[in-house]
Length: 241
Image (tube, rainbow, N blue to C red):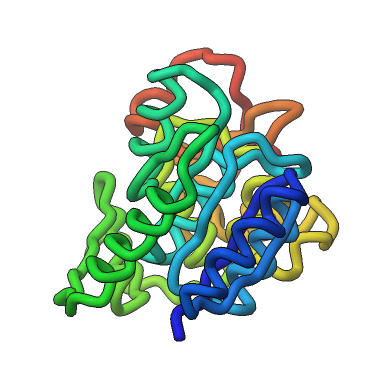
């Protein structure tokens, strides 16, 4: 029995869709905000997620981005926004399909069946290598190198570096990093991020006091430089000493 996670603030719609899905033989979980939805996705490991874009706590686009970084679970996005740009944004973030409200329940079910069929096909695992200058991350084997030297990174340090590299050039808030890297421990103090960034800099930077890679965005969080030379210019970014 396929398990489907439904994330939507509309309780009446959720109840109606749950009845429809369960009559079709699916097991259904429901959350009404993005934070709870992430928790359920990580704990229950659903086979498919139906995700509304406009959610409290964490919006649907951010949820989609975090989920796609963590897994290949099929994501069907819902929205009442009649805007092609929003649809394109959702697909660019990794959604597999998009449905505009109002919609016909039978059409939604057809899309659910199609996504589940597609995800059931065997996929050959791919090795992903993330690199910049002399830094290299092998995400499949969870190994990191600086030049010829293998770095001994703790689990959270590795996940944090992978998250930063996946989002090169993008300023990431501490809350985003907590939600992605620490997951179920999301409510931990934001200073945890600062401590792990300091440890990470000590391992990957030639001079941790003057980092070339991981820079601080004051009042927000951190950003991995788009290019190593970028940190030589003044972009209002300063390393935490």
